[in-house]
Length: 192
Image (cartoon, rainbow, N blue to C red):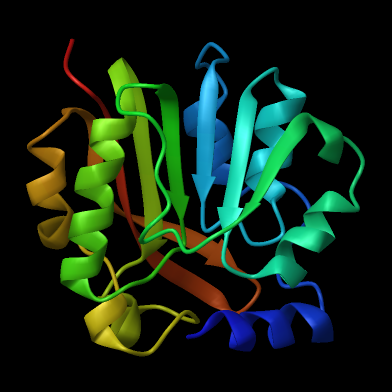
């Protein structure tokens, strides 16, 4: 999708809950605050949640309309809101303690390139959390994008996982009002 398509979606209605994804919150709750980026932040729900916990957060998305929704929320002044394409946005190498990529779906090679670059942005010991719709969700789950070329899987995340000390690499089940959705998860740390 193009930025204009997402601008239209966000202009029509709020897309997600105001709180963080439950698994994201569970996995990140124990990390000590530092510098973080939320790539493809959308309306900023994860960026705002991290900022509430003392993180210095940059929320990056190509939809200014989505980011405007986040900018209008309480606590938004604690987040640096950046309108940019996550495929080309960058920070100084080794400058981040956390890179969060939640429900960003790109063609396989573009995603691999982005995630490899994301590992390079982490300080030694910094964490990468990737969560997104699994390709198996097409036939065994509900919701999500229907293009298998942009969905995640454990196999598709393995090349990036090899760059990390992996805490978790798995397919996970997520309850929704319409049934169970299947997501792929990668959580790991850049080796010291």
